[in-house]
Amino acid sequence: MMQLTNFELSIILSAKDLLTDPGCCVFGAPACDDSGNRLKPTDPRATHWCLMGAIARFSPGGLIPYNALRHIDDCFVALEPILSEDFTFEAIYDQLFSHDQVLQFFDFMLQMAVPTPVPTSQHFSAP
Image (cartoon, rainbow, N blue to C red; front, top):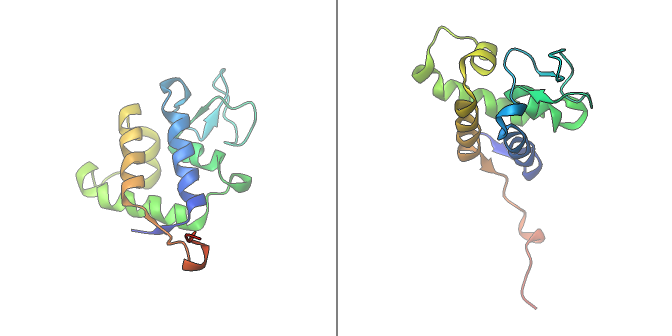
């Protein structure tokens, strides 16, 4: 799987934490308000997000970093035979998953992530 920076991992973890509340989860739109109006994931009026929308919400400028996006895609491809070959990338995230499955997918993404090693010069040394 992909090597992710601590920042990229924190984006995915923050998105998972946001969607832990079933009331914040929406399917079929990146984000929406309490009235169901579609919004950009970074819009301050947004109160509900889909899996990808939640990740975009914590990404700089709402743009998911390339390595994180590749990692999400790799995880999808790994699970695709289990789910179905007939679903597209967007359908899997927005329509097929239940709330529990969204959280399980986040867990899978985090388990499959390879943290970028910290250079030796940044390690603490004993005095």
